[in-house]
Length: 75
Image (cartoon, rainbow, N blue to C red):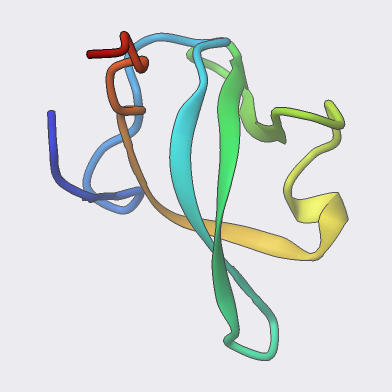
């Protein structure tokens, strides 16, 4: 999958797997972040990869997500 997916349209089917997400703050500024959707089908939350903190607790809202690219394998 090589395109952005709005969280309004779909969420990842796999929990606890890192995704590249686009987040926006209340002021509307946005940035990239690596996060995973943690939880289960009844309750889930986006968690920032390096800190294990809820993305919302960091002051952001996940707007869209996409799969991470393949790992670098050299020449």
